[in-house]
Amino acid sequence: MGGLSWISDEWIKFFEVSYDGIIIADGEGRIVYINPASERLEEVDKDYIVGRLARDLEEEGIYEVSVTVKTLRERKPVSLMQYKGGKQLVITGIPIFEDEEIKWVYINERDVTELNKIKRDSEEVKAIAEKYKRQLEELQVREEAKSEMIAGSKAMEKTAALLERIAPTDILVLIEGESGTGKDVHARWIHRHSLRKEKPFVKIDCGALSETLLESELFGYTKGAFTGASTTGKKGLVEAADGGTLFLDEIGEVPLGLQVKLLRLIQDKVFVPVGSVEEKTVDIRIIAATNRNLKEMIEEGTFREDLYYRLNVVPVKLPPLRERKEDLFYLIEYFLQKYNKKYGFHKKIQNKAISRLCDYNWPGNIRELSNVMERLLVVVPKAAIDAGDVETVIGCRGEEVIRTDDDEEKCYDEAFGEFEHYYLKRMIQVCKTNGELAQKTGLSASTLKRKLRKYGLRAKDRTKNEP
Image (cartoon, rainbow, N blue to C red; front, side, top):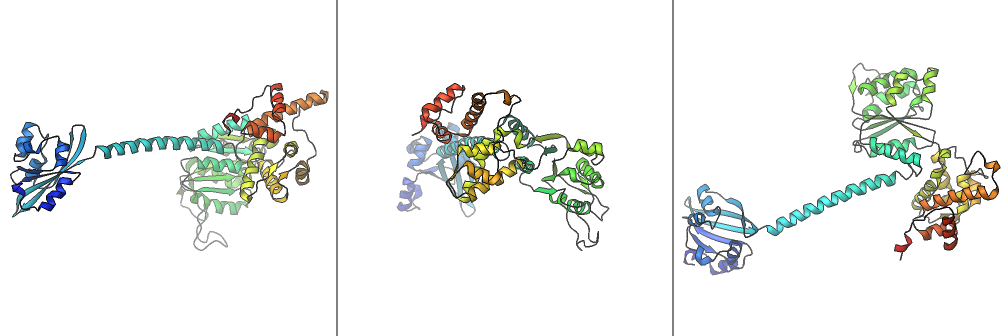
């Protein structure tokens, strides 16, 4: 290593044990040193390399492109990517100057094969993770659709499927249903699963304000627009919803005079603040809801026909709870879990109590059911809510769960059989395992098996995997 006499033996020892390949060439491009790592990476013998010119080695094909030659030519640090024996190498040449002339070229070689493999594996893992994340999000959407907003009846499953299709779009939605059927919940669900979910969701109850106040709340006003107005003016809810969703609850309560302005907003996304003559443009999605029959209002002359057809692009009709009592099992279980979690309880509800809840007509719909379930869990001091507790809260006294036109012509056994069939069918949907089904129904395993066979029902066969 006479050419490297200027380097101490200690430094040479460092070079010899380096994991990276190290090559040193002189100012003419003659290789004067190559360490063991470089021999391994280049798959060459140092006795064949040391003392030779880099350009000759390049011509012989030892190097596809010589970093030494390229560094001497460009007179600046150079990095190349080369493949040797299935290995991917990053090779960097650094010129060392003396009196403005290149005295030495220091070459460092690093095997990045494993690093790139790890990077590729990481990208594959990331892609798989993203795939499962999307699948989990889709499952979450479906699970949410079975909770407070949507339950398990066929009618509501169709509604869930409809909402999944329209949520990512900007199409206008009109939600119709009695008070308490969940119009607000549906509107918020649509927003949360839309492309505007990161933007505001702004709700206004159109029936809670007078015409003047409703107009100023919706469209805002300029300073001094009316007596008592703010001296600086006020931004309205329409403008506050810019980029997001505006939910017009109880749209049927909007006075005729203001319906014209709403029509312009829906058609052109343009409005004029109270007291101003300048139009403002917004980018909003509009969802409307009503508990009134808008077609009847059109005939009465209290609702504009053109506004109705602008609103009624995608109608979502929510049936009252009394017309979808099969959903009660899902909803009772949902609210039981919700309020147990909220208050840190572990309470249960007996089967007869569930039957009493199913007997009730629920004029207040899901909102009333939610309130009743919360009240039962908080007020009842026992660990298990019974039928008497339910009767105390809602006073239901046996309005039948199942009604048919010929009930009065049926004997007791036939009528009871219908209810038992219906009851077991719904409990199968609620319970996660056969053991839970037996526990909640209060039936022994053998009795349960016999009754399921009687009605041609099959329980969820999950107990095989239970410990």
